[in-house]
Length: 220
Image (cartoon, rainbow, N blue to C red; front, side, top):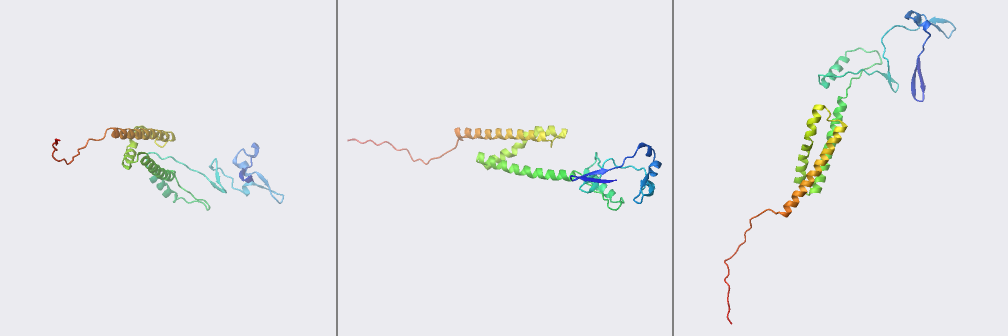
């Protein structure tokens, strides 16, 4: 019958009659209503009473009512399916004031993937600078950063078939593995540096020498 507003919330107001006056559609159509002039008219004179399918729940976005119709896509790419649905929806004639919006989580996932890629590049650049500061060598820092993804190769082989690559637990596991591999790589490079300092490389050196001098003896 209307809406009831209280504390910025909307409550639908409905009328529920006694079982004796709602046994069938004809009884509801003949339900008598009081008029402001004091008379009575049947409900069918002022409203269309019919049986029709109706949604069990209607959501509200501020003062606009909306109804979500969802579908899962399997065996096909999500982008072409969404484009096909949009073309089909444009051919539907809607009453005045109604409109249809077709969207999917594909755009949200693409945006999240782009943000993840940017964050990954930023983190990689920061790690590279920290490695250079710790090792005092751009080449060794680049070598360690390039070989670092090899530590996660085993996890990728397991995560890809299981479709758990972007799981939060999987990401935390990858971070832990990469951290341990990074620490071990730094320790290994430091150890090699110490070994090079203790055992320098053998080289060839030449010195310009003249003929040997003969000892001189003086007699007094």
